[in-house]
Length: 422
Image (cartoon, rainbow, N blue to C red; front, side, top):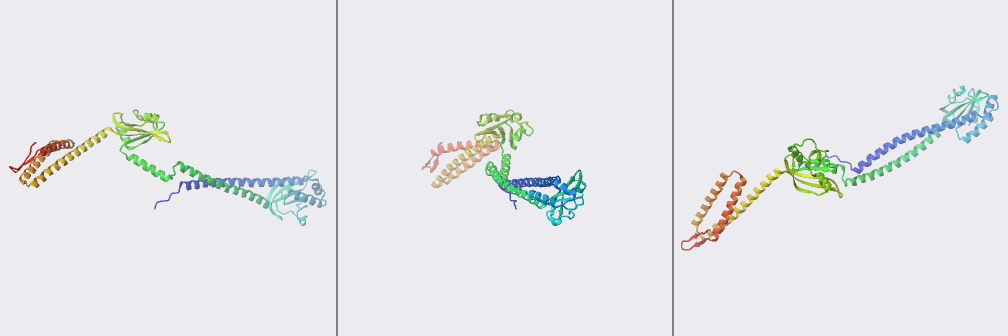
């Protein structure tokens, strides 16, 4: 079963869509990672800035240094939390005990998460951990008072917010990718229409088939064929042309060579230049004479090259001799047919007059004379064409003589015989 080939438009659309889709996927991954990194970096920087702001507050520093009432810290951090829209702001002392928290019931209890150890030793940092408010990104900043660390502050942003921002960015990327894919499909369809218009509506498989058939036909033609482009470069030579070139001593593959470099006696560049055909011209290629036709190749009123068809002159002469022989045979057959018709008329007349003795003598003379003449010619002349020519001329002469002979003949009633006069 023959495999079904895809149409050019379908193939172009599929290939372009695959390329566009692959490109968009790579772009989406890169952009998504960039957005993710940007959101993480922005969230981290936001939490660090808020943490530094809290750590630099005199209210927080004084309250931790004097271990005074925690309500001032809670009020201060609550205001900043509402303004900055973060998940929590937790101020803790050097023992990790909370001094502020969005849930006031948790104030006075130990900070939960296990990632506060470094900041209590004076090392700021960030981490992602699960606490009482869920999974959050935390920024830790140490708090100093009079050059001594008195506590630390942790600012948390819920990871759900980060994920929502990332999802929103990915959604926009997907929408843009779908639009890009649709635009790519439309562009591929328009491109396929443009390509098919250039290819005259043919599919690539049809073009390959036509090209293969054309090459087969060109190679099977008995005449030599050579084609050149506008610059005189050879782009087509068939088998018959190569045989003639080899006979003339021209070697190598001429495809791609300049016609003047390969064959000095050509006139194809002149045909390209002037645009006028030359028919039945004689050309000599290293002693091999050919009869050649040269025609310019014109596409959209523009000369794009020239093509030459030619044949060995000796073959043409042989063909001409064969045609002369055929014509001679035809003349011979025509003369013999005419002579045979005349003799039949004579025989018919003799039969009607019932002169059977004269009829026997007449037929005997015809048989003996014809056999003798044809036998002499065919036995002594070995050339079939020349023998046919002589037999034809002899038949024509006999036919002319017989016509005159029969016109002067009459029936003698006294002797009851046909009298013939030449």
